Image (cartoon, rainbow, N blue to C red):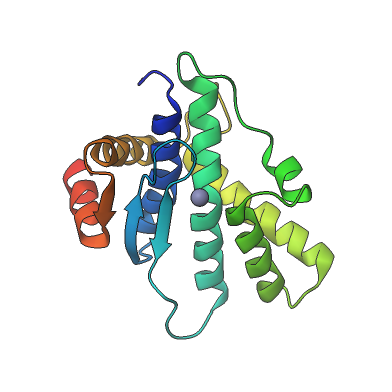
Length: 174
Ligand SMILES: [Zn+2]
């Protein structure tokens, strides 16, 4: 496993969004490493058509997969400072753009019902954990990590990838 660096953690975070989109057939415009230290970016394709429960669920998974991939990777990488704060703590503290977007999505999916929103997000997170694994013991989906690692490598050399370019990298790694 690649040794910890902040840049690699950012690459894994953005690759986590992208691979989840790729595996679930969600289109995306680009993925980038940003300045490689604090934040990169992942741009999904604009929404078209109607928001079925399945579409909302897939979008929710893509949103949460970045932080989860980063968290699990940080828990395992040699030399890492430890996993970032727990997802739920981060959610209740209101931090993180991804989580904020996921909450907006949950409110839409659950028509604003607060307790439904909570269990919806819990369900989505469960799906994501099935991909990423929970920590050091549980490996998650082998294919997910194979693709995430390949895309993080590609981001290291060309800090921004258009949707087609990223898809090509993933097709080759699959
Ligand atoms: Zn993110």
